[in-house]
Length: 171
Image 1 (cartoon, one colour):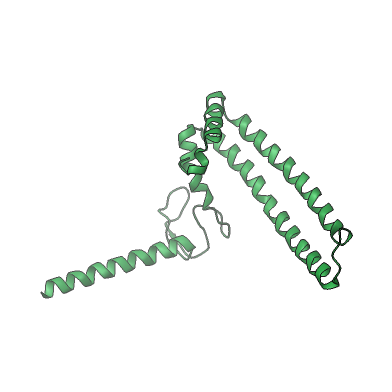
Image 2 (image 1 turned 120 degrees about the vertical axis):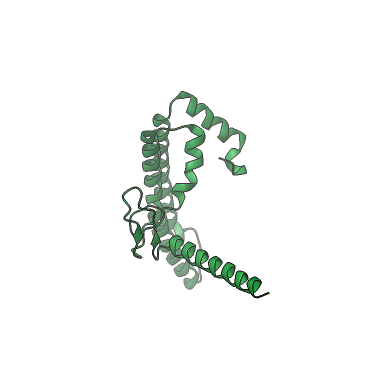
């Protein structure tokens, strides 16, 4: 009976230890990074998450691994695609800033009590300019990605897009 209790306590202790290590590794508070790809082994809580530079969250990179494996991309192709996606991600700050300005415009219009087309015209003009900028950035990133892929890879990607594979979540 004593052995059963001691064994249960050991299992609980190991479970807590593993959970604590996973929590620390996930949120960058320290832990062991394996020492591979330039890692030094133990991370001293400097915020490196998923192999990215300190302070930058790169969890989305691992999600693309399956995509790259199915397309059988080369490391050079992967670098081009990732850099194009990074350029698209940079637009998020511009959209966030515009959202703050739009909230302010809406607050002033509601505070004034009279809402008409003219009161929000400047906000709509900013939206149109931002949308045109985002379109150009998306097209440029798409050009870079398609130029990096060869013909069979482009055909496979087109089939996935047309067939709804991304919606189902298996790519």
